[in-house]
Image 1 (tube, one colour):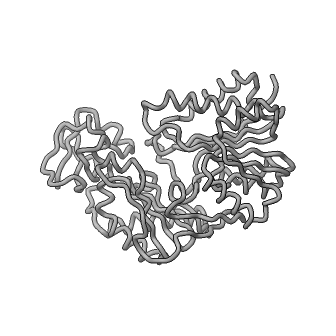
Image 2 (spheres, one colour):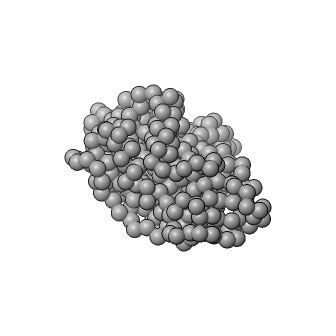
Length: 392
């Protein structure tokens, strides 16, 4: 077994449950044949810390799979995957569109598996997990008997692991476009061409909370993509919903979703840059009762945080100005680099600069099928705040 020997005191974070070993924490690597191999992680005295896989060419040089001296083989992955699936069945019984495996949150770092009915979408985001992909697919076929399995490895993070980007059908056959149901709403999902793995499953429980705030209201859904928030707004009794997205494909998909759910008379979708759209609406003096801001990640590395903060500040400040007195802002950030405290500070300053008072009604995170590993703040990436905006 190859060994990663840590520098002095670099085991402390790992011993409380963090799963990543950074390259600058390693003193020595012994006996390694190839990157991606299973290796023991040991402290500077040679004491066992954990067992996982290594990639010397990545900033995250090792990822822990287990804190036990156990064999990493097919049976290991079978037990770990079955445990993740059983947990969903216990917490979210009967749900057919959800995340089945959430990387570090399920102690399977680098592996994501989303379920859309009888179809699976898979990502292997680290070299060590990529080497086990065929075994993992065999196990998923054995446990779930999916109609089709698609890999969505067309993400830039794989380049950091020395992996190519790719996507395609890897098991089964048939149409990669499916219709999923979520809390009574139906959505068209393109497993090969849709954003992320096809849909934003992590906001499911937050979208459901929208019902409490939209009855009889005029709602603006920014960065609407396929209309997830818009469908829930219409379902909750909104009198008018306007969705905005820069992608014509997203606007077309959202329009089709409104049709299949019977909301075409309520929902209207516009192709526009959200920043420009909000500025134009402000000039016109138009007001809304509820505004949803659910942008894509503005920041993918620490060096981009300052620019992202400016972007979040602008859209939230402008949205606050567009709300009627007592209106509701539902605003999100999906980057782990924007931590809860920073996101809250952005909202405080946005309210100040908009000349508004902001009262936090709810502060939420990702759904229970996207578990947060408490010692790893990186796993709590989604922030979703429901804020009441009023005149000062």
